[in-house]
Amino acid sequence: MLKRRKFLKAVGAALATGISLFSTRRAFSKSGGMGAHGHEAHSQPEGHAHMPMAKYPPIAWADPNIPISPPPRLMGRQMGKIHTLNVPPLGFEMDGDIKVFTLIMQPVKRFLTTGGAPHPVVSEIWKRNNPYVHHMKVSKEVKLWGFNGSVPGPTIEVTQGDRVRIMVKNELPEPTSIHWHGLEVPFEQDGAGGESQPPIPPGSTWVYEFTVHQVGTFMYHSGYNMMKQDHMGLGGFFVIHPEKSNYMIDKDFAIMLQAFALLPGNDSPDLVTMDFNWFTFNGRVAPDIELMTVKQGDRVRIRFANLTMDSHPIHIHGHTWKVVGTEGGPIPKSAQWPGNTVNVPPGTTRDVEFIALAPGLWRIHCHKLNSH
Ligand SMILES: [Cu+2]
Image (cartoon, rainbow, N blue to C red; front, side, top):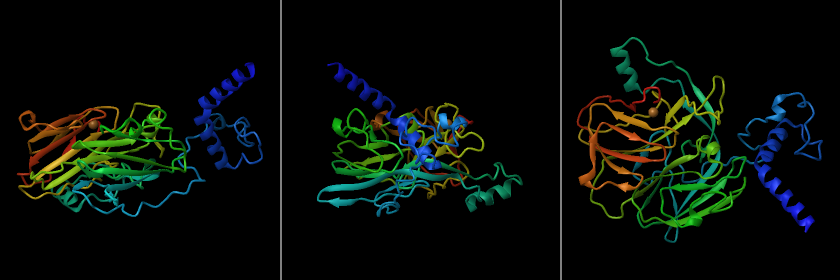
């Protein structure tokens, strides 16, 4: 009996320290100091004994033992209607009646801004109107976690009633899972790592499969160690189109709001602070964000989703839109409300629609002016 209790205690301790031991080991093995020690977890690698970093190892961004796969075959293939600015689309394969998508969760280097010249249209107008450039030409490349080489991940587009299978490969240096945010799926498919499923170990693959019966703009994001993993960038859109509709939209855009805390000189997000200083639309900052180009008279839909820790009132110049959808799906026509600023609280999505009547280079930005 005593032996058994001791054993259980040991197991409990191992579970509690499992994740931190994991990253400790990775960090040390990178420096090459571990090989000589049989007792990995408890030994100080030589040469690190007097360095504080040995006690608080750096965050392992990538595991050198896990090769990073190239994007899956159908990455970059547009099979839907939505244009997710600065994010390549993702196609699917059919297995019988099932739409099969592949998501590879992996370390991704992302230019939040390249510091290059803005779109020629923008620079022309700037030159004409103002001899000064209103932003500094800085480039910022950061080490994030994403899907299929992109932060945010590609937009998954399906149709109401579809059977969907998502193959998820974990190439991150720690266990993970994917939560389907807003989708009404069976509990085992919810992706709450540690509750609805065991977390997906590094290097292995997990398969999600469910039927979608809703319509609207939803999300996917990490469902395990979320404070770290979501803040490393692991999120994307999951959009379900109506099965039958004769309602036509000319241009359908998607913009994911994410925020990162990047201390000066750092290329990895600070994961313990709430002082975010880089606010992104689809992993990019202005003015280095693709333009939404439309024709005069087009009916335009923009889908916003917020994976940050704050609400963002998104404002458009020169137009009045109607808020036509939330993360709960479409809003009945009689309840849609007009405006030019839509608040997007954390964890929500908002769809807006308008007719692009006025020609021009119109701004769309967060009206917390310290953000976007
Ligand atoms: Cu904002």
